[in-house]
Image (cartoon, rainbow, N blue to C red; front, side):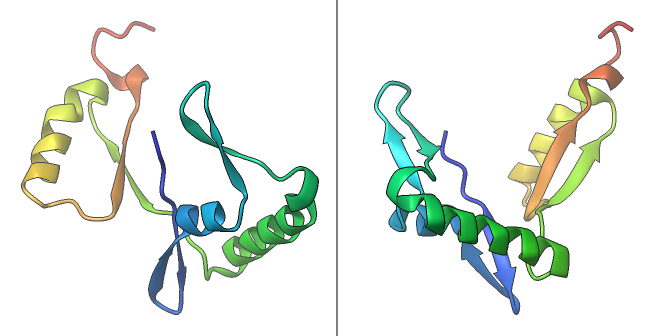
Length: 107
């Protein structure tokens, strides 16, 4: 799985993952066929500064997380969520399913 995160500066969405790959902060893991973070060795100083800027951007509000929507009903809400996605009623939203809210999940 490859996750692309975005950060927003003055209304422009900039993909974060491709930039970090280009700058060498991620390395290919041949065992799991994943991209894994690497801020050791020659990229250590750059990684230190880079991730401080991300923290600063989050604190100051110029970087923001994707909108999250908790779907009611736990896993029983997946059908409605998929219908919304297929019907293009959802845009730039991350669905969160609380498994404990699923009827019959047991508590």
